[in-house]
Length: 287
Image 1 (spheres, rainbow, N blue to C red):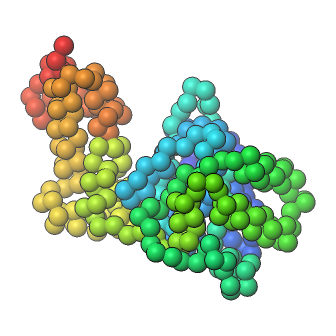
Image 2 (image 1 turned 90 degrees about the vertical axis):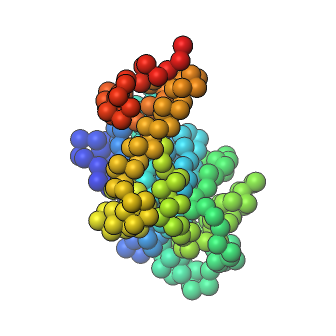
Image 3 (image 1 turned 180 degrees about the vertical axis):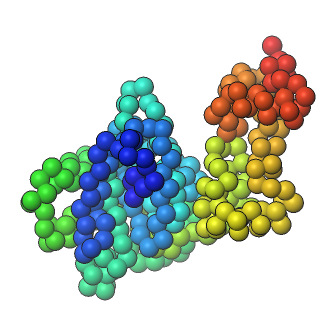
């Protein structure tokens, strides 16, 4: 899951350990920039970032993660955008996967209270406080990746239970506990909510479609009904209009305004800006 759809030239290391024939532990190291789809329809995930930077993206939320950050994500569609960092040239992370069928088998069909569904929360993920205890837990996982001959089913069941208890006891972790109680009840959003949340970010049409749990063709049809425009045209115009307003205020450089509105290619931004407003962005910016 950590390196799905990654080109082999980007992957430096990828190790997995299953439990009951399902992916349980995963360790990956890769060269950014990479954009990783993370579609978890029947599972949840605890992501611990060892090195590098990434932004986790859900339907309406963004969470930036870098050491010593960890994220807890319930089932749903996500993207991880991993970017280069001058202090950390690689993206290195550990993921622990929670499958509903595995949890039922581990707990003999009687889930503990902190895993039982409560009221549906607004978030599909939360940042987890990385206490010394959690850091030591990750160290133990890394040890088993280096010594796989020591791993057995009984040990993995204990490690699964241990992590869930640690997460449930996280200090100041009300949001984490809310996520735990709804691991397999994803929050659903209307198409318009997803679009409005990502108007000014670097998210492609295909990625927006996935966040809406649609095929790209279905997404484009629904988008046309809602906005009477194509996704590419509507999103580009909204971003350019906001960039123009930012430049008129004069608080940002052209590059800063472009980045703020979801353009990562300055040349592309300048060309699109001139085509729309018949003037280059440099002439809009106040001194």
